[in-house]
Amino acid sequence: MQDIEEETNIDSLLKIASYHLSLGKNELALQAYRRAMKRAFADVMLVKNQLGEIKRQQAELVLAEQERKNADLSDYVESSELATSRKQEAEFELSLLQVASRVADIHNNMGVVHELNRSYKQAQTSYRDALDVYYNTCKRFKDSDDPDVDRTMSNVKRMKKACASEEPRTALHGKATSIAKQTRSSDPVSRNKALTAAVITLQQALKWETESLGSTHPVAANTLIQMGKYYYEMREYDEAVSVIRQAIRNLQNALGKNHPQVCKAILLLASIYERHGLNVSPEGVDKDEALLEIYVDALDPLKTSLGEVHPEVGLVYTKIGYLYGKKRDLGLSLLAYKAALKAYGEPTSTTLLGGMHPEVLSVGCVLQSTCIQ
Image (cartoon, rainbow, N blue to C red; front, side, top):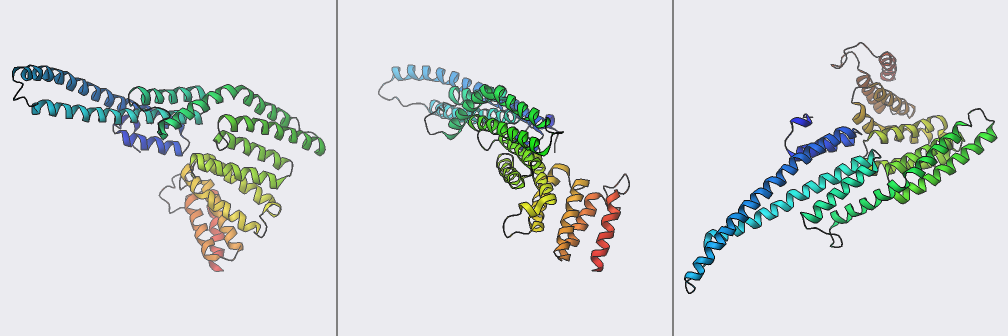
């Protein structure tokens, strides 16, 4: 990935920003968007100056043309030079609309990053800046069937609600955390009663988040995950799995399937199935089958976040290999264990610089046993 400050192509900068955003590296994404904005604004100023020069020249041509027209009304024909000038003016005006629309798009993208950072005032400012460009430069207005303008207008309104509701939402989350902390030394009945109160409090926060940010927003998804953790402590495993699965779907739709938050949520779900899969597996689905599906789903976001060679990636491959082994699918089990060795950085790997990972020997023994079978 090229250094952001060295890149000059706007399209490349936008791709860099999207890449960092998909990995949860929001500050790097913002840096790339700011760099793209600087380049796009320079393009706008260049086109404006060129358009201004064309209009100045055209004014002189019109004056000269008027004098020529007055001198010989019968034989007057507009000069080709003036016609060319008018054609150039139209081309530059179209170019200005295009480069200005790109500036508005970048303002919108920056608003999204600020929103993900929970900086709602900054997000609102970015969305408003985009609207200003749409209105004043692009001459694109609301109520004109323009989806970009309508979406930006909607985002401004959402951020206004988010700013207004931020204090009560934060207070509700703090209250839920405080209630949950008080349960650590309580008897089971009192603990469940307190955790139920914490869940109810988070449901109130979730209602605020749904009304202000939207039901599928990452903030709402994180609230669902916290509710799932409380349900787990209450041993209500079905409820825990249900809300965490809903959160995963929302995070995947909002952030992409390989975002770190998606990965963490999937691994949380896997940990519940590992411990209590018999209680939460869907009807007719074996616990191991459900767990295997979850671990396979976790692989891509995990590798995207951590890289191909990382102990956590190796651990997931090891668990996949174990589950395939239990199914007597030795071919896939073998492939998974081999992938685990590479992820841990086995001795043949070029990435291995600091010695063998402790798990490599263990996986190697399992792999040898699988081959013998």
